[in-house]
Image 1 (cartoon, rainbow, N blue to C red):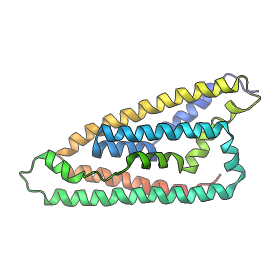
Image 2 (cartoon, rainbow, N blue to C red):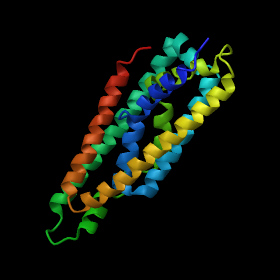
Image 3 (tube, rainbow, N blue to C red):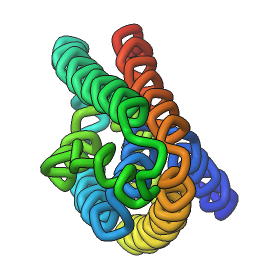
Image 4 (spheres, rainbow, N blue to C red):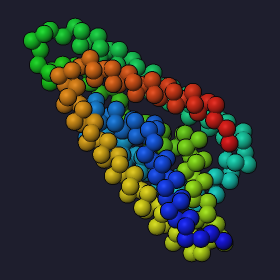
Length: 222
């Protein structure tokens, strides 16, 4: 039997996953920095939907399926890693183009014009990318789902209610966190408008982080 202490323990565990820098949060911040809050809102909606799907899978026992089928986990790991590397390479390419554009801009050009030149919507289909990031990171999926196992256990007191309350709470916290990132990203965009080289360097850093996530995912084990 599980005690009442499991609530804060599992809540803290999943909050740790939410707040640690990861593909979803970094992508939302990058989109907000480059394209503003409106585009970042699309990534937030996609993450919300992706997390909801994962919670539904948790209720259906998906974590157990991944743990008992290492081959499936490895296939998802490879696909997820390649996708992260693809987005990271895109960001590095956009950062390089932005840096070149900043060098070629005349000194008397307005910051707004400079920013428009650098951020020609490099993140097309941000909703699709964010949703894919939510669903194609098997290491995060496994950790995420594992935290819900006690709450969908038939022996847990009132499992459906426990799962529902925890899921709703975490979704609200996650969306508030992503909203803060979107607002912070838009503020950074305004600052980067007058410092295009710094903006390009920031995007390159996120791109490198994505490549790092891809490598870490490649070495992930169940």
